[in-house]
Length: 333
Ligand code: ADP
Ligand code: MG
Image 1 (cartoon, rainbow, N blue to C red):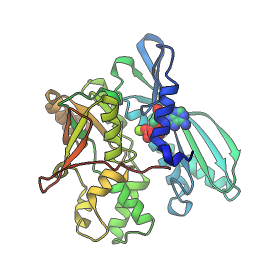
Image 2: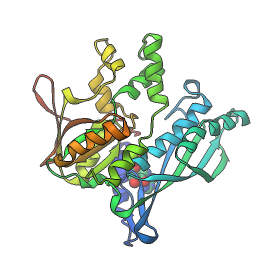
Image 3: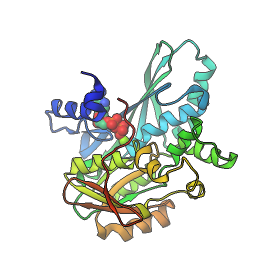
Image 4: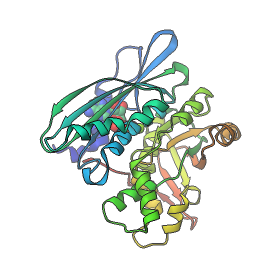
């Protein structure tokens, strides 16, 4: 059978059923942004891995070695953020084709320095191999969190409000710019390219939400709002309604929204790689959340809908028409 027939998420869901952890020390196995297992004194270790493969996740001609180092680490950190954790240690493995020089690899590591310093990370291991034609980068990150603070995908409750912590669609638009599908002025090109190449892992946002126990479920938006909201809904046995007029777009996205080839809603729903956090929280926590995002975190927070009974994900369009979202985001197979 081809993987296409079962799909990436079908395959993972099979694995999740097959490999249920048989010890209570494993708090979460397959199926969330990171695995979690108990350490001493009710602290949990978080462990997550993400792979970046040349010509699947990036093209060498589109991104510098430093930028690639930054992005590889950032997307991994994002999964620790999505559990509410504090990132700690990094393993970095490389499959290196002949065309990649020593200097390129040095730059790749240099590109990680800012994030390493910002979050006090240590690179503590990895693996190095040659590779056929393409560069492979695999990162494993560990994190830590108190057991009771972990925010899983499966905790959404009926009537929870749905929030995102940043503009949606910019990264997908940046990918179209890189692929030459969209030609904009230099200013806009640079903004969208940066959104795609330099995602900001929302560690402080995730940790604050977790420490203050303000959310019931959380995920990072790696595959697009449609796909990632579906993960929360499926795992929480709930449905969702979101509102087109509440989806947050950057000023730059609004400026190009009337251009042919630009459909902001499609970018937001199906584009992916925004790496904002998507979380659900009780209505009672709303004021506190806005207060903390405004005064302490000084970053944006947007309410986009609510969790409802059932298993459909629906969007209320600006025309007031309600539509079921059936398509999801990027699929590898
Ligand atoms: P994310 O987009 O947050 O990185 P993924 O969709 O990659 O999440 O993974 C979802 C879950 O499936 C995670 O728990 C991950 O560890 C697990 N997973 C993905 N691929 C495999 C695999 N080949 N074997 C075992 N578990 C996997
Ligand atoms: Mg994730």
